[in-house]
Image (cartoon, rainbow, N blue to C red):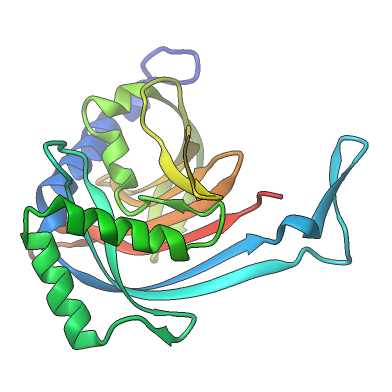
Length: 247
């Protein structure tokens, strides 16, 4: 791990080892589990903000938001010969409209993840993209994978502050992407885009376990909380919140 000036920061040596270890642990275990997810999305409506002399100002007293709630079975998979892990969902409800029953949704989702049928897996991704709000980032649950032993070299880090999370002391590091092709996937008007990354890592002290990641791009703000089940040594997302500020 290096600081903003490109030089190695001795304070981050132990932290860097643990961040990479958590990333690798996630890559080894993530595809073994299915979760039930309730996802809340919020995006500013296109005409609720306007430009005036180079500044963005509200067209009304407050910005107007589109909101959506999607309940799904949630998991991770790979497609084709690529080793890239994607988050995928079998939607159950969208704003309380029933898409699939619990029983049928769980069965079809399990079968899809266990199969080698990339057409079925891609359909799950496409179905979700059609329902998500414009400008909301996806592939967020696996953000920790950006910081494996190779990927961590694409970021610079700076100490931000000490904090408390879950009643435990934590160190907050700011990260900025300086290279690599990684990024989050953003669907807007049917187009797929990638956004380079910057944000903050919360590392639990004294073991430097990654417990929260915040990502900020020029389009979205995302918080991804991580949970480690110590008894079985499995790291999985505990929550993910996304907001779009695109006008």
